[in-house]
Image (cartoon, rainbow, N blue to C red; front, side, top):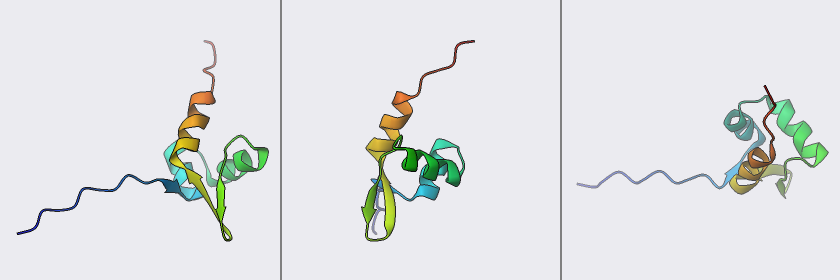
Length: 66
């Protein structure tokens, strides 16, 4: 009897997946990439966002005062 494999933590995200992780729209992710606010890599014609870059972007956000 085999045991189920543990899920692998994702290292690269498609822009659509990054949008879901950030709870924003896909076009917002593309705008952030175009503005240089969210770093990404190109693999051929595909754009991918590293998990570390997503975390760095979120850490750079400043909370709004009440």
